[in-house]
Amino acid sequence: MSTADDIKEILDNEELLKEKTKMIFQEKDIDKSNFLDLSEIKNLMDEFCKEIGIKPYSIEEVNDTLKYFDTNKDNRISLQELFKLIRQLLSTKYLTNS
Ligand SMILES: [Ca+2]
Image 1 (tube, rainbow, N blue to C red):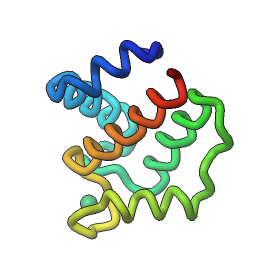
Image 2: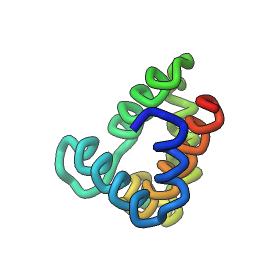
Image 3: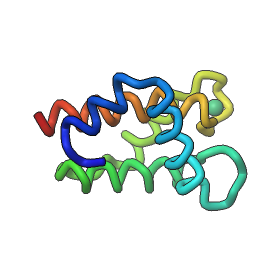
Image 4: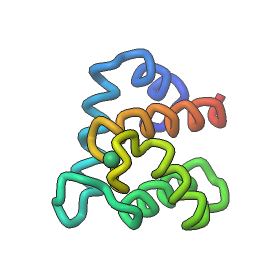
């Protein structure tokens, strides 16, 4: 999952994107709470920045991102909320790759 074509395929296919999100969610939910908290989201985004070769986001920026995608305002990210975040990250990655 690194070429622009692979990313485009995932972005165009809701089912694939859901699967991918689920995999990431399970991997990042270190304490198995069924939610991703700020440090888990920071970890996810650090990895993402490294992958596309940009400077990691500050904890404040990650917190803003969390707040933006935290639609039910419980300060943590559910699988449904992560879905939108992953779509956005993959779109960014696609634009950087192509
Ligand atoms: Ca939430």
